[in-house]
Length: 144
Image (cartoon, rainbow, N blue to C red; front, side, top):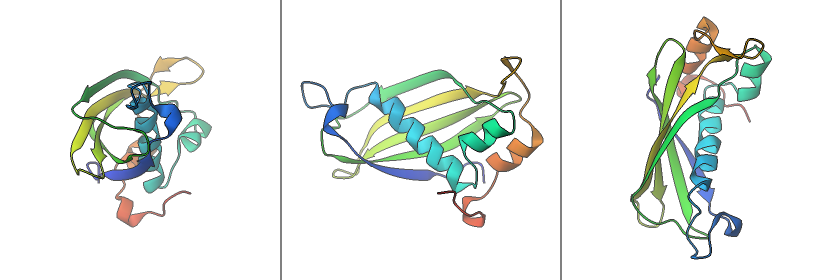
């Protein structure tokens, strides 16, 4: 179920805001990472389990588009899904939704390359990993 969305609810902490009380722009990447980890757990695996099987998944490109404001103590929901899989890479897309307004306040994506940890080079996505990526989260036990 490649395009199934995972939602991760996050409360914006004071330390994640700038002097103006807005969420500091770089923190969105941390929230994307948190949501991406939840996406993996919903499919029964973790980044650590991939690493244990000899696969690294570094971010090689990130894009964010800010459309609204997020402030200290706001509740947000980060929606994430895999939108594209290529031979050695995959694209995760994100929407950050303000719970109070229901509006999408940020959109973004990250590209990840599957990398061999020894050679430190991109490799084709292994078949076991493709199976994990295509799992239907409704049919698998979420990893806590």
